[in-house]
Amino acid sequence: MAKVYVDQDACIGCEACADALPDVFAMEDGKAKVTNAEGASLEEIKETAETCPTEAIKVEE
Ligand code: SF4
Image (tube, rainbow, N blue to C red; front, side):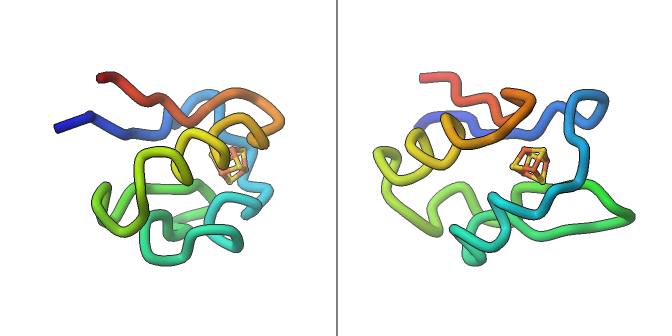
């Protein structure tokens, strides 16, 4: 299973990922966290990772 996480130092809290995939990402203390890596397809998660302005979303396969 792929490992999905948010680099807490890189995240600027723009909320784009949590808006796009609320079943995967949630905001906590101004940063995004992965709440459920299986809340969307890996393809959707990768697409969302590409929209992150700081490339904070990491996907390791
Ligand atoms: S899209 Fe990137 S910078 Fe924005 S909240 Fe998500 S992880 Fe943080």
